[in-house]
Amino acid sequence: MKKIKYNIYYKNMAKSLKKSKSKIVKSKLTPGRAKALVWKGKLKKTPSGLTKKDLVKNKYGKIVSRKKHSLGKRMTRTVN
Image 1 (tube, helix red, strand yellow):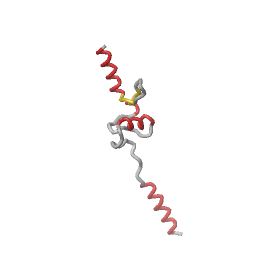
Image 2 (cartoon, rainbow, N blue to C red):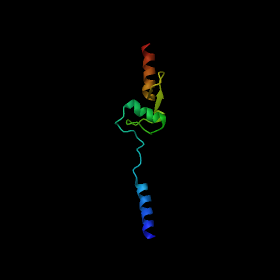
Image 3 (cartoon, rainbow, N blue to C red):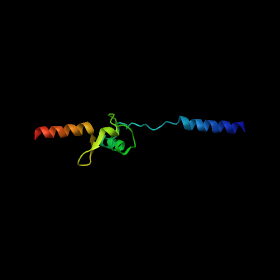
Image 4 (cartoon, rainbow, N blue to C red):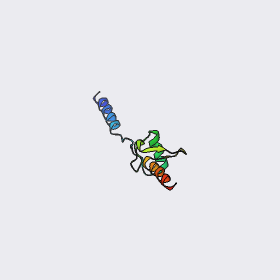
């Protein structure tokens, strides 16, 4: 009886010590794929540190940085 309790204890302990999945995208992925995973909510951050609130879709449907998007808009206004 005592042996069974120990086995259950160690199994539960092993489950709790199991490595959890990272919330930040690893650098192996391409930048566009990393942004897509963050946009869908699968992960929290891109390798460069962008979160969902820092991303926006452009008129072609591509996921881009909010800062770069607004910078490009400003630059086209000054050129025209």
